Structure formats: structure tokens, C-alpha cells
Amino acid sequence: MDHPERRLLISVDMESYSRRGNILQYEAQQAFHDLLHAAAGAVGLDRVAWSTQRAGDGELAILPRDVAESRVIGRFVPELDRRLRAYNSSRLPAARVRLRIAVHQGLVHLDGANGFPGNAVVFVSRLCDADPVRRALAAFPDAGVALVVSTDIYRDVVLEYPEEMRPERFRRVRISKPDKGFDEYAWLCVVDEDLSMVPAPTGEGPDGPEGGAGSPAVPPPGPVRPDSGQAHPAGGISVGDVRVRGQNAIGPGATAIGSVGRDAILGGGDR
Image 1 (cartoon, rainbow, N blue to C red):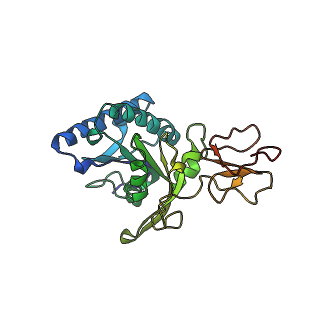
Image 2 (cartoon, rainbow, N blue to C red):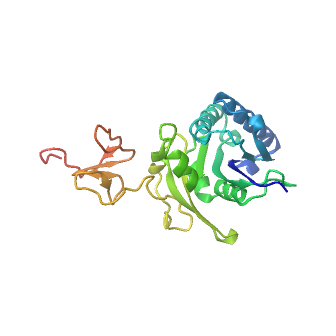
């Protein structure tokens, strides 16, 4: 047995694969293979060098040591999403290929007799198969990819390279599988979609059984000054008497994008 190696792991699974007939499964597998290779090549990644464990509806990939994690999340995943959207635009819903993708890093044995042994492999597979990820992708019929990353990846990669990612589009979710002894937090986004527009299912959230909605991407550090942006109990951000809902940015020179609530007071007390 060789020593385990610390690697980046990607688990990919197709939505609704088992509901397809034989021909549609065949076509979906071909599209899956071609689109992943094309997207990787377009951003300078060599898929041939990836160690993969394949299934009919997806794969587990162990990436080479020298692959930049920010390139995988910030460029490969969005490129794959664009290609999936283009592929799906001319197909009936039953023939579309939509993916759940999970990214994690950890120790893995590359010389297993029937796969890749290691807790990191189990972890990334649990993320990819989680109900919050399935629900998030289902909520956006035109999307190509729902991406979930471990807390380590979110902290070390997504937050550190915001010019390539969009940290504000990620939502923290709790993934709990009591029968598997698995209870972890992760960070979820649907590529090029605004997950904040999807309300949390009743009884869920960061402390709920599956954490379907989660908390804001970056909680405010410490007390909030009276003149600064703060969370509004009904959702959105408040600055003074103005409440903004949806995508937003608060700070010097920032632009707020969203809808202003009817109870907002703009200048001189006019409604």
C-alpha cells in the first residue's frame, strides 16, 4: 500500500439519469464525456491526466498535484455550465444534461484495488448526493451546474480569489445523513443564478435537518454601526431607512442592485 496523497477531489453526478430510457442514457453519457473534456481543454486543464472512477451517471476525479484549485472552481466549472446551457437549449427536458458537482480536498490512496480509498472520497461523494444540492439545481430549470464545496475549499479558495469566484453567490448549507453518521456544513451555489431568490424550505436553514437555505455567504464581523449595511429581519440589507432586497453591495462607491421595499424612506421623508 502506497502512502496517501493530498489531492483535489471532484465528484460529478447527472440529474435524473435513472429516469431515462436506454437511448437517452447513452446520449447523456456521450454528452457528459464530451462536454467535460471540452470545458477542461478550453481553460487549459488536461482531463487525460485526471485519475477517474466512473459510473454511468457521473464520476469521481482525483486531480494532479499541480492543478490550481482556483482554476477548477473559477474557470472550469463556469465554462462547463456555459456549455451545458448551450447543449440543453435545443433539447427537450428529458434529454438535457444537468450536473451536481462537489469539490473537496484531502488524503486519498491512489492504488486502491477497486477505487480510491479515503475519507475525503466519502466526504465529497456525500456532498454531491446531498438533498440541498439536488433541490438547488431543481429550482433553476435553465441552469447547468449546482456546485457545492467543503468549508475548507470555500475559505481557502473561494474567499481568497473573489475575482474568479463569486463568494456572495454561495450559501452555507447543513448536510446531515444520520444513517451514515454524516453531519457537516458546506457552501452551495448554482452557477450564474441567484440562490438568495429561493426561500428556505420550512423548518430548514443552517440549524435545520438538511440546511436547505443556509446563512449569508459572509456574516458581518462584529457589531454593526448605525450607518452601515445590516441584515433586515425580512431579508435583504438595510442602510439607514433604506432596505434593499436581492443582490446587493454596501460600502463606499458600491452599487446596490435589487428591489427597494415599499417601507423605504428616500430623502426628506417622501415615500
